[in-house]
Image 1 (tube, one colour):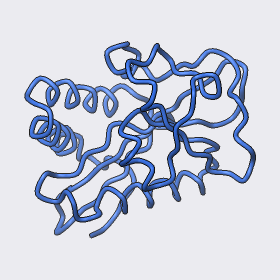
Image 2 (cartoon, rainbow, N blue to C red; image 1 turned 180 degrees about the horizontal axis):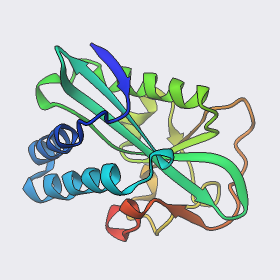
Image 3 (tube, rainbow, N blue to C red; image 1 turned 120 degrees about the vertical axis):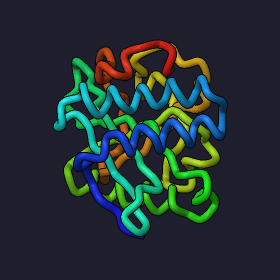
Image 4 (cartoon, rainbow, N blue to C red; image 1 turned 45 degrees about the horizontal axis):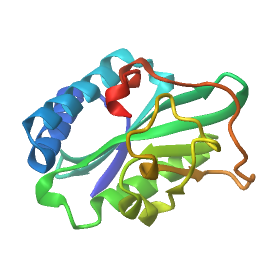
Length: 179
């Protein structure tokens, strides 16, 4: 398995991976929703505002994780939100997602990102260092349907103090349906 950073002309392959994975796990409507989200993240989000990491085997993309900018109007810390993440159904349960996220988090740490947040399954994401956090510490861009799924991980040695100001996500995530 090899890891790389960037979409590198594989936008359609990435959309197909996310669509198929989410369709298999949660049904066709969720697969379409997440596939469209990925298409928007790749085509409409400026490159400095997103980080795409992939896991590949024999030249095929078998996993991917996308991180996008999350800004706070009164805080200059560099924050990224992780989402979505997908591992091809036939590769699930083999540690691909954990290895991919470990690789991605290290690359973001080296790039000077201060904090990474995600909105997902606490049991899964705790395996790579995420812990529950409240919206008083890290405000979300919209009201959260499942606040217990709001998770964060500092990538520096600094204490994680509350982020100040209104949260703003990239345009592709600027929809309460994702929160």
